[in-house]
Length: 475
Image (cartoon, rainbow, N blue to C red):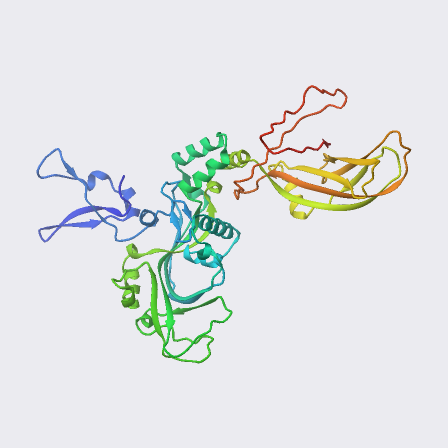
């Protein structure tokens, strides 16, 4: 396989000297190989194909340098790239940056903020929060001291220079045969959840689908005589000309007890660009020039829009993964109802207070929901007890409960008011891959014909597993 950081070269003679010209990537399809392969002067059976370092970059080069199609995991020490490759990048959306350098302030007020910063995530969404939670959980579990994971205040200034952004869609990534194989083996294993945990360790938890490449410098302001206090604003940013970087930076004002223009800078971190021998002697002007000089000096300075690696698989495989892991409790609630029982053996039908979000789950056939409920009379009557069954209408309406009062047949029926406490929950398959790996729910389904009861076909109970509760369902 040809290294994507190399280009084919065509030899030509100029002033009696042999020289080589780079063949652009877009021209390769129009040039036959025999036009650039030459015969060796030493042997007629030997042919030479000349290659040279690409003068221009493309997405293949950037992926070769930074392995952008590998999974990644958040850790307290920074983002970790997986050892094994889950996907192969087939294409992408590459945009060349035309912005100037930007300056800003980062303020951390919690362990979540600190985890995001260390892993180069600076915009929060629901997916990022999930991976941050996983990263903090792993850090606490592996750290001898939990002090490094508690909430902390942290502050620094930064300069960032974004040179390019690379965005990935589903169609741009193709799962590797090795990844497909381990997924298939996990699905058919006795403990799929445990296997998927190991897969995330080997192949990474997620792939960032938006990556900013360039350079980033962190630094602290300091002065001998002025004590500064940081305001409430979480971010401060602005544009700065490259020429200005060769002079003093950070002369803008901040909220402080006193004002002073006598600032100094203590550089603490350099990402991308030519690395100085001593970070204290970093020359910002030279650092910026190195980013403009070559793409080889670029590094990943920000990750966005992470997607868990399972979500990038084909749809049929995603569904099989979700079903293999089992079900979860989507909703758990308790309701109080006052009911008047006026007729003997006439059940009560009650509509549950189902939230809108849970209604969507119930109407989603892929989740295959089940409702479990139990009812108790809080008046603690000695003569009555109650049972219930779930009514699932075939017309698409939401389920309801049918409650039966079971009374001693030797007692005379009396109309009375009952105070019922109803506990109910909705169980179904996961809607995403944010699995609770330590909990697994399975539902056993048995058809029962009331006209021909079979008392011999009983459910076997295994005392080694937690006890199971069931409820009758009617349509």
